[in-house]
Image (cartoon, rainbow, N blue to C red; front, side):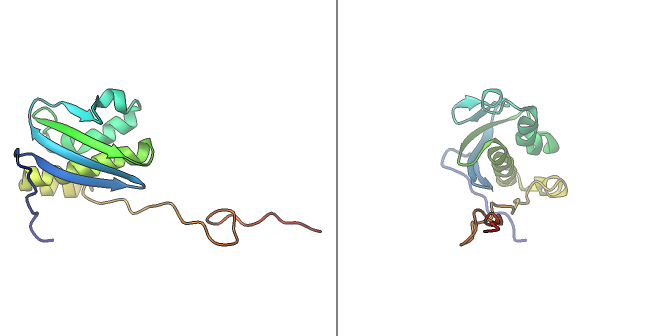
Length: 138
């Protein structure tokens, strides 16, 4: 893989984009005190399920930067699980732009890999992606 291109905004923030299913998250990192804001709401208010919160925090926990980076996320599309996965990937990518030395721990914990699973498309003549028509004897 080529060296990571530093994508830094005018204010010196590190930017990253994460996607999962139909969700897209735009992440902005800046030095701070560990605040995480998602769509102008705190992390605990936006993701009420612990599993989703832990998934969003996992890149920061793995590199040990949970308390010295402020994270601002704009996420849309999909549901809770997809949005949590998109936020996780966006934070991991932004951390890479923030500090390129972090590639080894992020790569080792598989946080830079995009989950390729998507909803399968509906096919012509069927009720869903694979669900056929109901059998009729007469």
